[in-house]
Length: 377
Ligand SMILES: [Zn+2]
Image (cartoon, rainbow, N blue to C red; front, top):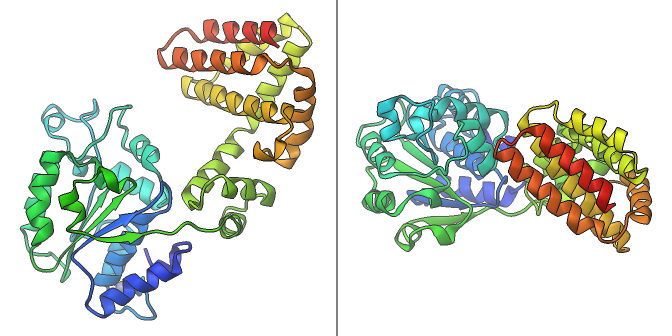
């Protein structure tokens, strides 16, 4: 990955390459970002820059053997560590001490498809089965062992640790000495979202690199150009993402996926407003057809849609982040729905989400939900 492939943060790119060029880069860098800003991609681009023999113009060449292997995440001297857990797909002995190496395939697929991923995207890609991922002392031992060997192909070894705040105290303490005095030619690039969760002793050993948010205009422009996004939708996604390109991209993709949910929630509200129980039961039946994940996503979408109607009903549509195309329907619902509906409907949707997650029979969940909408509206 070259710096030129990364969005924004031009000053940061110049400062990183400048540090390398002048030989003033520390051996432990801590990249601090908000979710979805792509700090891990900056760390990788920096590793590629350090190891490229033909760099020029503030970037790696992108075509040499080292760059090629960086691009595929298969360079033998570049290691990735991230939080993992003992999941059922691992063998019995692997489960006892799960480490990142067992999950590299899922990690590579995610990183290569979207380097602006967030924590949840990572855990989904690794298949962590809703378990809390962490970086354990087993991983710390593996890091020490990997860094004790000489580099295979390059002059430098790079250890990229994503979500360093997920290192437990035992793992952190085990790595302290290595962070303070790493073997020659070794770099640590740590990425974290919550630096206050790191041990102060780790923080004090790192040079802090802070990623800056992009402007909504810049994010919108990139989404339109690279994702072929509709400008209205891209701008809404950019505005609610606090300068994180990855978050905006996620919002946009979820919006696109959610067109079907929009049609379902409108049918549900229309049938409830008509007090048409037959139609409501047919809708309940239809909502049970997709798998549990989509059932849950529908409920989350419905909650968001009802919040938007609530803001229209209270005369503040501008803070609902509704798309222009939604204004007419939201205004129509706001004029017809009674004011007690919102809190009761949101509570019912929360109950439905918990029930879906607890594997309650889907038909029971959605018939109950539709009945409640019928009564409350
Ligand atoms: Zn190169």
